[in-house]
Length: 190
Length: 199
Image 1 (cartoon, rainbow over the protein chains, first blue to last red):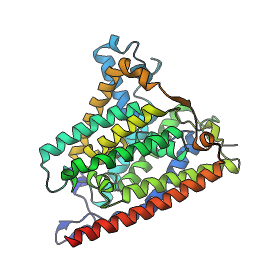
Image 2: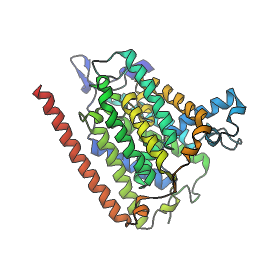
Image 3: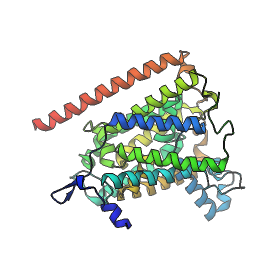
Image 4: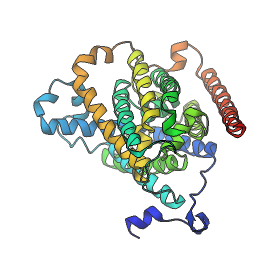
């Protein structure tokens, strides 16, 4: 099966009048329960939680070092992601975990018939504007995640389950920021 | 105490990378099942039109939290060996607010954008490129904002320690908060649905 077919693969159950109808999402509490169990397993097996934004930081730090090695010297932020210089900084735990996340998401999407090349947005918004907003939102996320020492995965899920004060303060702030700003970008989504 | 396994040296660094990959597969699969691969689904929680992402997230946190408490209580897991970062209150609140705005503007957060990209969402690819840019800006600005970044340090501190309340009581409070949140989420969904019908 080639890549294109994977993105249009669907079970007979998902076909209605020749149109692709994605499988319904499973009950959210059941998925939450399973996700919680996998997170618990991560704590038990590894003694740490999951994360995501750290991978992007490593990519940025490695790239900046490649282009201008002197500029990372004395910058504790970049140095923190470059390791001791003995091993390749890209070969780390989070990197392998995120590769797994990408593939796991693909497998689930393929089974459910949800793998499709699209630009996600509400009906009243143009593609161009949506991609601009995606870039701006991504930039804010990158900056904010680094300021907060982690993202919704590392601080929210992981810090939240461990009852970390910083994790809970972060999560409340994320929801406060998102709900407060939602009104201004409602045309994008609704 | 027998866990965390890795901290007790049951397997080495190389094996830990394979473990990371396998756990990642499970996270990715469940993220996608939870609706985290769709920017519209993720954003819907901020308009009370579909709260499933909120429900998945808080069920997961509550489940893992109860499990941690139980496994540590029966003496299976040494909680003091489970790593989590130190708290720096002010920068984490400010960072959270910025990330929250980025979440509703961009439609994703870092973890969710990974499964959105692998399921073909083009806006998620642009979002991740934006993420790299934002981190680059942070890195370049770091010498100027590092004072703020290291401000209000509180160390490795948990809610029970901060408030001086028993771990079990905090657990009960969080469970009650989660149930209240789920009830409010259901109510919000119904309200928005009836508002739509009324139009």
